[in-house]
Image 1 (cartoon, rainbow, N blue to C red):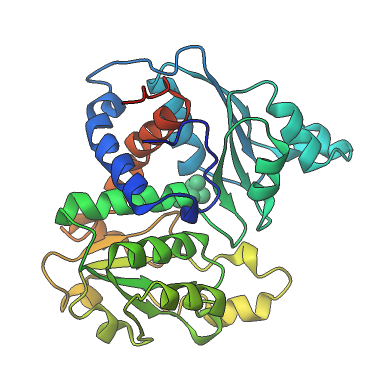
Image 2: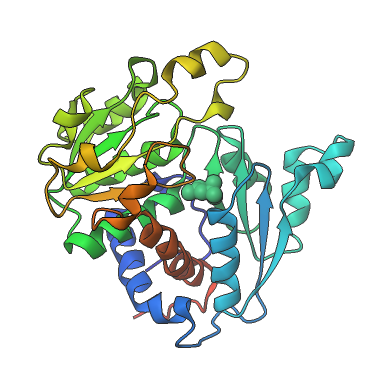
Length: 313
Ligand code: CP
């Protein structure tokens, strides 16, 4: 694998072969993520967590990954506590941070902020979500969860449900599913359809994409139901539009009654009512396993980028 020293800003920054290598490495990482085996390939490495938007899973699983690998973290969890409050630019903040750390993980509310950070940084930058843009490391753990359940990423029928307009997780995931040859079913309220630029990308990749706003029909024959939250924070002042679409879909045991027995429900989380808690107790619920797999997947990625340089064969 040649990821050493590289940025990961978009899922497009990784080839299919590189994604497969990361997923294979993440499977080997599971006992290390659980703490039953110990290795410290990131000893003496420092990874900066620059989070300018709230996060539970992404920041803490990245931090857990760094700790499990023997490295240390520097964390900005609140932009208001940095000198950006005094007017310092994102560019300068990242430029300076890259002289303190060996890599930077960034989350920011603005699309494109991670790419700007990669230009500012002298060290690798990993995008942990930039506005409605991309969330490539989430995609890696989404794929890892699907692979664990089905042993393949090809030929699956995957329903992407919810906010496909602003949802950065689906923007990254749809591209990867197309690369792996899975079928994509888009199901969203009309005002939250997948933007044209992403549809064009999928078409260029020759992906099999259909649109099915009817939830019951979308789920029929699906292998994976990928549910997303309608993100209030992306609507700005348009509260009326948010209220119009909020609560228009909800996955519960009634909805799942007609699903394939092996269908898995994924959700990047947090959920805000789209998946009823009763689903947690069914074999369909895979979202907490998905949240755990964030640790071995991010460990595998960090080791590839920051660990000992692979020797040329
Ligand atoms: N999946 C995800 O990005 O969760 P957080 O917002 O809690 O990091």
